[in-house]
Length: 228
Image 1 (cartoon, rainbow, N blue to C red):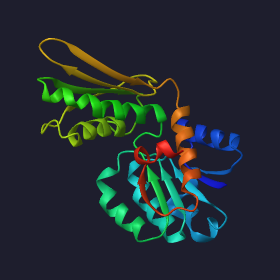
Image 2: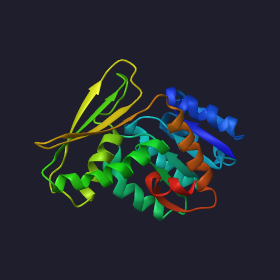
Image 3: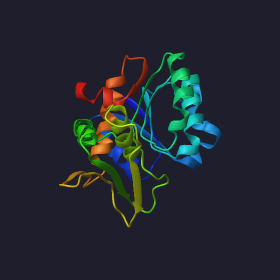
């Protein structure tokens, strides 16, 4: 595959490394090279199979709309833009491109989401819940997209009408730690995912791009990761 990678931070750099290890050709575009989406015009994307985005929330909508105009499928690992999902979903579904996004592309985190959905039953048995997330000091958004996904999984479980509180910490170079604590008068349950490296995020994003080949539509990684 020919991949274009937007974003050359710590995760983006690892995405490029993983993609090359999986025998793909990768072109990396830094923000300074993509002013006003100048790197996403159709003639510059002619030979590109998919665009992978690990940039910042404020530019995501413009990037997506540019890829739609160019007819190029997209994988988005950037978080913090989810208020735009209804608009983006409509644009993507009317465009004929393939699109996958996720608050977290790690297979381990998506297993964690499944465990959270099962554990949500505790909220019907006099347990209260709290979500804690810790990330490095450079992270742009708080709470993290992954923590919001945990909160949403609890809400969608049907076991509670209350929104479980998220507490965020920004410390040093913490890659990503997410914890759900369920507490009753009798005991306390801890569920935790602690990322030891960013490699899980990178591998999931590249595999999502591979999965997209020949597909159209709007997908969330949590719904497709078991197929990879």
